[in-house]
Image 1 (cartoon, rainbow, N blue to C red):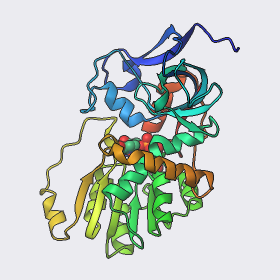
Image 2 (tube, rainbow, N blue to C red):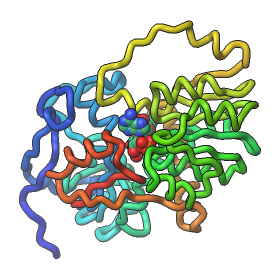
Image 3 (cartoon, rainbow, N blue to C red):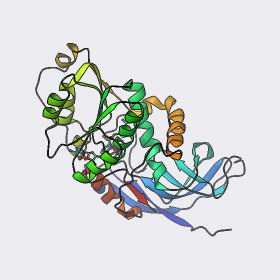
Image 4 (tube, helix red, strand yellow):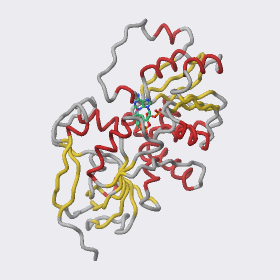
Length: 337
Ligand SMILES: NC(=O)c1ccc[n+]([C@@H]2O[C@H](COP(=O)([O-])OP(=O)(O)OC[C@H]3O[C@@H](n4cnc5c(N)ncnc54)[C@H](OP(=O)(O)O)[C@@H]3O)[C@@H](O)[C@H]2O)c1
């Protein structure tokens, strides 16, 4: 049997802090053995969710009630290295994905076997599907009521969440517009089949939408917020739907205060709507979405993009969080252990 270390490293929030780096600390803890229906996993890759991580470390995620110290990170893929006596469906050597809060930014984790999803290989690609891709699919279909032959706008389209949303909207038979902030990201969007790519650093989003889409946008998947949100609301079609998936432009700063007429003035005359989306409130759709995404991925109908920058080890996580929050990434950011 393979010898396992006696201790391992994980990243915790030691205190609340304005930015992620100032709130976190690496700690070394004993490696626990799994009992009963639990399994021990050696994490190989974890997904970086800078928005959530930063807000969590500020104590600004209303549905999470944690007081430091607490564990960090969400999705991880790894290998099962020990199982409890009552575990039947999972074996040592299986590759599994976990999405439990606190299970990501650590070298090992012990978890209930039922919470581990078996995958073919412990590769980072599956982390673009769970939970990121699941959120994209559920937000588009359940909240955005995605149809076919409509105009769909995806913002931060070359990011971890956005690049999956772009492809799902294309697979559903829509005309897809994607925004991004660099030529490298535009290249990725071209490969994914995006119909109109708007690099917001070289073109004005509002002007492009007004001149090229005079009938408006039917469905917006907005990850960015601020002026991008304003332009998207302004250009909604009759009965258009805008899904607030996130507002990453404000995560690193305090909320911007603006004075303008209330939102219903813009929505009412077009019978348009703005809808919030938060995956924890749509958990009943997660399993079906996950199975569909895995099928699309394994049958090569869905391409996944992992940002090529290598982040290695627990020590690299604060840098990876900042990298994403600074908008530098192309595809999903992962850290390898
Ligand atoms: N509601 C939910 O349940 C849920 C679940 C998952 C994710 N999300 C949200 O989805 C969004 C994307 O998350 P992700 O983890 O997949 O990140 P990501 O899209 O991989 O990375 C963020 C991207 O946002 C873009 N961006 C645009 N304006 C920005 C600004 N002012 N500052 C920083 N970045 C800016 C950057 O690309 P460009 O500059 O190229 O646009 C950047 O690469 C976030 O808002 C996140 O909170 C929500």
